[in-house]
Image (cartoon, rainbow over all chains, first blue to last red; front, side, top):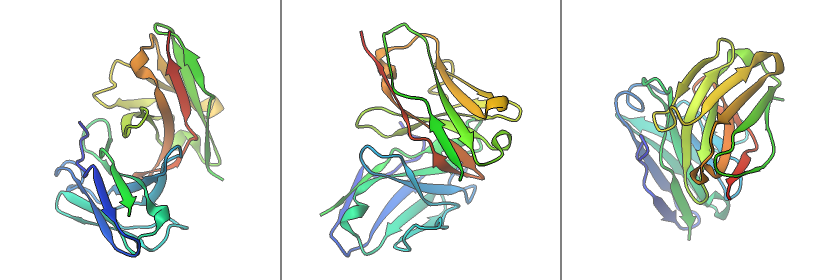
Length: 111
Length: 117
């Protein structure tokens, strides 16, 4: 069982917006603005999409945005495109000794 | 360019030992944590642990404590993930990733480990 809870799957039609949630505790998501999101296409290396809750690395589309409220962080993808179909993982800093905690991943299907 | 390059695919038998590597370049290797992530076929990413090469401070996820050993060699800018006795359940893709501040970037290309008799 992963420390951060994500929905197993979400889906949306092209052009629509979807939101993926990531729920933790006050020892990780809620306690620090250190949530990041990763996109992984099948057979590929995970790619950083959002860091420190809401910041986009250079080269990442502005259709991707992040936010946080309490112990839940969210990734929103607007204007869904077929290429967005992938698995998405949230990661947070944790006050526990392991320093890092992952979500279980969410499979995004573009209908 | 900041880069992590991992060692190649491994095929091993149960009970054998294994050490895979991740070589960093393009940044101050000693001063940033490197983590290891497991991904079993068709499954999600699992955090294994992390090491600070500068002083070899190593932290393990509870699920992996005692199951693997993470180490680093500053002189060669390389971190290692090691098993003393592999099991079939260790078959997976293994990624290393640099902990840049509080996010993971970049990632290595992955090392596929297959354990089968």
